[in-house]
Length: 86
Image: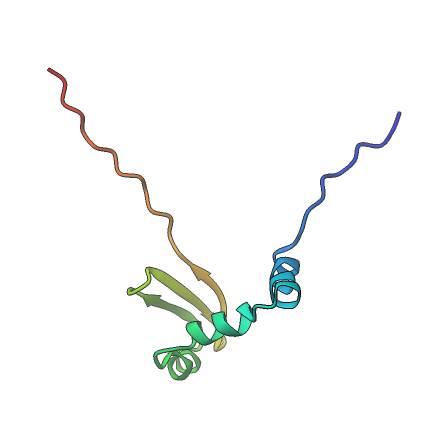
C-alpha cells in the first residue's frame, strides 16, 4: 500500500515573495504605504489596541499595541430580490 500523496500548497507569504522577487512588484511596500496613508500612520500608535474603520474602502484595520495585525473587509451579501408571480 502506498502512502497517500498530499496536495501541493503555497503559503500566502510565499505568494507575496514570488510577486515581489520573481514578478518584480514591490507589493508589500505599496500595501504598507496605502494602509498608513491619509495620516493613519500618526493615528495608529495613539489607538494602541482597537479597530480603525476605513469607510471609504469598507475595511477595518485591527490594531494591537500600535501594530496593524490584520485587515477585515466584510463580504457583501448577495441581495435577494423579490419576484412577483401572477
